[in-house]
Length: 514
Ligand code: GAP
Image (cartoon, rainbow, N blue to C red; front, side, top):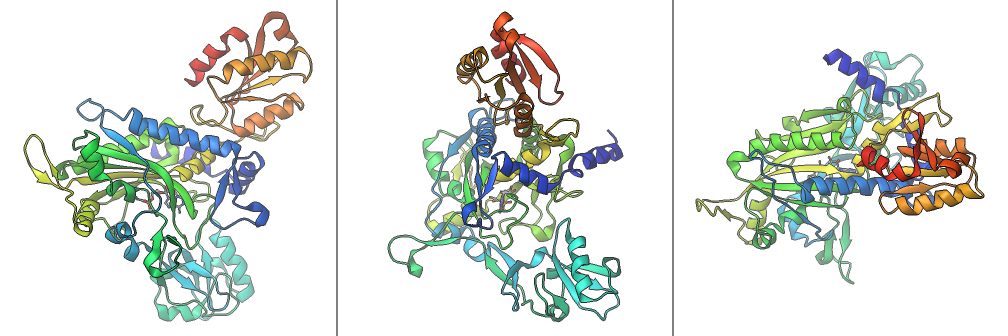
């Protein structure tokens, strides 16, 4: 496919998806709710409803299978060695001192003296009037930035417009220029403070005394628990370098501006694997994992055209990265980033940073002794680190398909492997033989797949619901079923219907879903 054709197809996919509609569907159908919604929600926190929990678990289980149960074959054709781990969310705070998080895991933020609000400085765009005489307007970056800026400018002066402005990120400006800026929620000019670094780790106190000596942190990334268990795993799991340790779990970051639905939240889940290898092989393994991880995202249904790779620029390298070896992000085209892309997963070359730091801080040896050559070295680490919850959002956005020809106006084109329900059984009427046959079929199929048995409401509404929750197949029981044992099977994407015999439904699902 040519680049131009690829771009047009990509635009058609993410460009016509409305994030507000997607969020509304997630709420309406029970995928994702604001946390503590009855108390007004809680910014940056989300609850996964019945279908959201199923979708998330499916993605989680597929990652675990692809990484731990049946890891990929390596370049030599042999299965890689990867073992799993489930470490504590709260660890000894020395871990985060050694890893550099206590001092360096921060974002620049500015406060507004007028509104007392706090913003991420690198997420504020400043619209600067080229005429030079008028105040500058600060708005949040994103696809609505121009619109927001235009609205705010109207309040400042009638004769300025977005077209007459230059746009800069706040952090690229001189502090002396802040005098000219009106903050995102302010009325007065010059109320934003100088940016300060704000540590993103959530603090808590362990034990009964709330003193500085008892401070601990909720983990900001799952990999910390992997590094401190590297020796334990090496000594007990009969693994040899190269090998991996994989973990899935919650991580917490006190993000200054959580936004874009679940994309950037304060509590989220990560799926991380640390691949320990010989320093000379690290570059090759990095490429291996970029390819494998991209293949995996496609295998769970993300479209080829929705994904790109992006090498980090020198100025965005993480605190553990050494000059010249960086991170490649696998990015997805979210509706809110369109026509751009947003990070889904990073494949980082962490060198020996973490193990060396833990060796230095704990006094425990992290060296590996090659059993064949007796060479001693601290392994280098390649880390494919992805967001499980961000993956849920990517899968939802990719699956969301507008189709005005059907009553729901939309359907979720989930890959069958992630679909929360693999099939629905719908008796045409709620009484008599139809629900009886349906229940019998349900009892049989539920042993094999996540099945929805939906008995009440008119059939059109029930199909619409299944379209919106992305169920690949609906089996409808009608009068003919009682006569000849056949049911209609409706394909979610094509809406085509055919009749198959009750006895063949399980093999039908096995063939279509796996
Ligand atoms: N151990 C490396 C690490 O944590 P990261 O790029 O900060 O790297 C990895 O995080 C992944 O975790 C990201 O690619 C993203 O998918 C997810 N993630 C990070 N911060 C997040 C947040 N605030 N909300 C949701 N997902 C987040």
